[in-house]
Image (tube, rainbow, N blue to C red; front, side):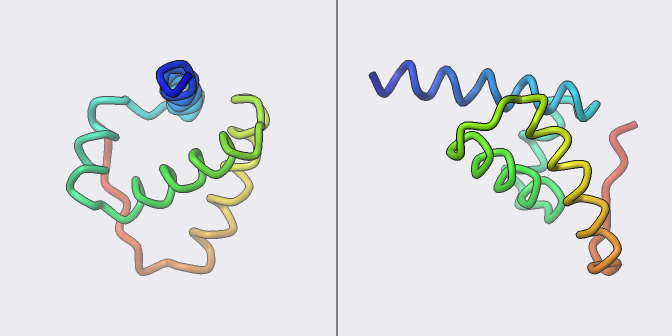
Length: 82
Protein backbone atom coordinates (compact mmCIF):
# COMPACT_ATOMS: atom_id res chain seq x y z
CA UNK A 1 0.00 0.00 0.00
CA UNK A 2 2.83 2.41 0.86
CA UNK A 3 4.33 1.85 -2.61
CA UNK A 4 1.09 2.84 -4.35
CA UNK A 5 0.75 5.98 -2.22
CA UNK A 6 4.34 7.00 -2.98
CA UNK A 7 3.85 6.31 -6.69
CA UNK A 8 0.67 8.43 -6.72
CA UNK A 9 2.50 11.22 -4.92
CA UNK A 10 5.42 11.12 -7.37
CA UNK A 11 3.04 11.20 -10.34
CA UNK A 12 1.15 14.11 -8.78
CA UNK A 13 4.38 16.05 -8.22
CA UNK A 14 5.58 15.29 -11.74
CA UNK A 15 2.28 16.46 -13.25
CA UNK A 16 2.24 19.66 -11.20
CA UNK A 17 5.86 20.50 -12.05
CA UNK A 18 5.17 19.97 -15.76
CA UNK A 19 2.14 22.26 -15.61
CA UNK A 20 4.22 24.88 -13.80
CA UNK A 21 6.86 24.57 -16.57
CA UNK A 22 9.53 23.47 -14.10
CA UNK A 23 12.05 20.84 -15.16
CA UNK A 24 11.88 17.97 -12.67
CA UNK A 25 15.60 17.18 -12.62
CA UNK A 26 16.59 20.78 -11.95
CA UNK A 27 13.82 21.14 -9.36
CA UNK A 28 14.92 18.03 -7.47
CA UNK A 29 18.58 19.09 -7.57
CA UNK A 30 17.72 22.53 -6.19
CA UNK A 31 15.43 20.94 -3.61
CA UNK A 32 18.27 18.66 -2.47
CA UNK A 33 20.44 21.76 -2.09
CA UNK A 34 17.75 23.47 0.00
CA UNK A 35 17.00 26.35 -2.38
CA UNK A 36 14.24 28.48 -0.89
CA UNK A 37 11.92 28.58 -3.91
CA UNK A 38 11.98 24.82 -4.45
CA UNK A 39 11.49 24.13 -0.75
CA UNK A 40 8.35 26.26 -0.69
CA UNK A 41 6.95 24.78 -3.90
CA UNK A 42 7.64 21.24 -2.61
CA UNK A 43 5.86 21.95 0.68
CA UNK A 44 2.85 23.33 -1.19
CA UNK A 45 2.72 20.33 -3.55
CA UNK A 46 2.98 17.92 -0.61
CA UNK A 47 0.22 19.69 1.32
CA UNK A 48 -2.09 19.81 -1.70
CA UNK A 49 -1.54 16.11 -2.39
CA UNK A 50 -2.35 15.32 1.25
CA UNK A 51 -5.56 17.36 0.95
CA UNK A 52 -6.59 15.30 -2.09
CA UNK A 53 -6.48 18.11 -4.65
CA UNK A 54 -6.19 17.27 -8.34
CA UNK A 55 -3.04 18.36 -10.15
CA UNK A 56 -5.07 20.99 -12.02
CA UNK A 57 -6.44 22.41 -8.76
CA UNK A 58 -2.97 22.34 -7.23
CA UNK A 59 -1.49 24.33 -10.10
CA UNK A 60 -4.17 27.02 -9.82
CA UNK A 61 -3.66 27.26 -6.05
CA UNK A 62 0.13 27.39 -6.43
CA UNK A 63 -0.10 30.13 -9.08
CA UNK A 64 -2.20 32.26 -6.72
CA UNK A 65 -0.12 31.48 -3.64
CA UNK A 66 3.15 32.07 -5.49
CA UNK A 67 2.04 35.52 -6.61
CA UNK A 68 1.02 36.48 -3.08
CA UNK A 69 4.15 34.94 -1.58
CA UNK A 70 6.50 36.68 -4.02
CA UNK A 71 4.86 40.05 -3.36
CA UNK A 72 5.29 39.60 0.39
CA UNK A 73 8.81 38.13 0.34
CA UNK A 74 10.86 40.03 -2.26
CA UNK A 75 14.15 39.04 -0.58
CA UNK A 76 13.94 35.44 -1.88
CA UNK A 77 16.17 34.89 -4.88
CA UNK A 78 14.58 32.84 -7.63
CA UNK A 79 17.03 30.81 -9.67
CA UNK A 80 16.67 30.75 -13.44
CA UNK A 81 15.80 27.42 -15.06
CA UNK A 82 17.42 28.36 -18.37
